[in-house]
Image (cartoon, rainbow, N blue to C red; front, side, top):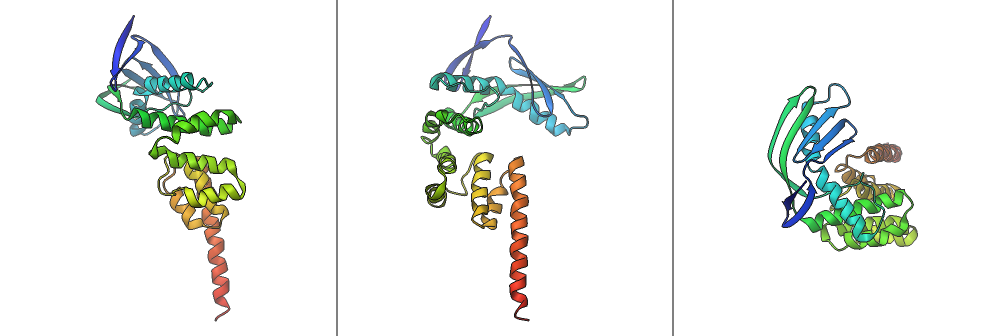
Length: 239
């Protein structure tokens, strides 16, 4: 049996009783209809993380569906592990059940074109890690078409261009203050660190919470310490 769910002026057909089980870094997650249930994989996780995981889980079916639609549209083999949609959650309710948290709510897609452009951008970064550069052109065409994601797309292009041309793109076309994805922020920060601009890099990294950004923050701090030591040495000659 199937039911029809209205999302952002579209009717999307989904199985009425479909159940999906998967794992996030800290939870086992079960989705069924408009409900989700999360089971912590590690002891003593803060309650707020349970709620955050459950709220995110409610949008999982739609996020995977958008990924599958993008893969079909572009005829590319894209992984379900990458998924995204801009959504709004209403009527949220939760209850603890035997060491787990069960929640329900209504998910509605918002800003579909923006969500699609951001999802294409996420897949473009993934394609680089998998050495699937033939995927980049169709994915970047989508992310370049939306102003909100265009800057991130330019970062990716600059990183793959390299050399003096890539450096010119970073310096003249990238806006350091309007980056969406952690991958983009880390890439731009790394470029400025290589240019010896640790303050610029640190400003970008302050808005990034990925492991790569944490590592770059350490590099930026070290670079600042070395610069401070050099400045101190230069000043000592006057005294």
